[in-house]
Length: 193
Ligand SMILES: CC(C)(COP(=O)(O)OP(=O)(O)OC[C@H]1O[C@@H](n2cnc3c(N)ncnc32)[C@H](O)[C@@H]1OP(=O)(O)O)[C@@H](O)C(=O)NCCC(=O)NCCS
Image (cartoon, rainbow, N blue to C red; front, side, top):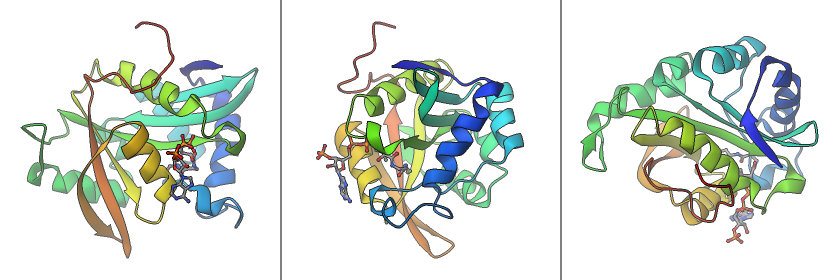
């Protein structure tokens, strides 16, 4: 398995995965195992790659089988849900720090093709992304829909993210979670940094 940052030519592979598991297009059989909520246009994928270097992927041969996004709050401010989270940052103290757009970034969505779930891809892709973002920010912030129990379990029990609070947006209840970027990911199998 190869972990690397996506290039422009990887966008079609990432977009294919997005359409398989996005809440608006996912099959009824796949939905109980989780879905992604943020929908990226081609231009937003491009900006994520070119301006943020924030699209981590796992490749089996030349197929993209997983992706994880990570970017500054400035990038995410295009989506209303993130505007809501940005406005709330100063109300939250986590790891002894009042959150801001300077000391934190937003990780996610992450998406792993069905046949690679329950494997080392989850901790390894998270660790690959963490190593890069740890150079820029001390705190990771993310959100998970309370109707996505698989993702919640994966992130809290396996990766060690901590619940900071819950919040409601557009009639959905979300967990807001955080992670101390100085901590290596539990159970990853990547080589030394
Ligand atoms: C979320 C996701 C990245 C997690 O990666 P993963 O490889 O599936 O995670 P794992 O299988 O290692 O861990 C999931 C845990 O939840 C458990 N689980 C599975 N289905 C579950 C369910 N319906 N409810 C609660 N827990 C569930 C698994 O058993 C496992 O726990 P265990 O290993 O202790 O038994 C992956 O499932 C995925 O891409 N889902 C579709 C997109 C998505 O939901 N992205 C996240 C958006 S926030």
